[in-house]
Length: 74
Image (cartoon, rainbow, N blue to C red):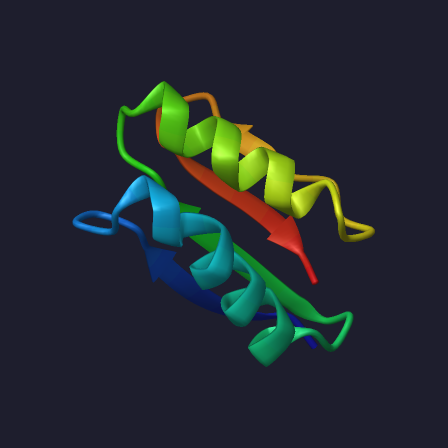
């Protein structure tokens, strides 16, 4: 079964992003969740999210129609 949950990082300071992503992934880690992280247009925000997700065994993908969204299975 595939579930979905979203973390919206609008308004989150860059210095807090990594902690928010770790908390989000750890709270939803089950192997059957499709998770979404909304980064917005900030390339810095996207880089922080992708660097943080690199610590997990996930394959993040950017939506080609909305590059401010990153999805992955966790």
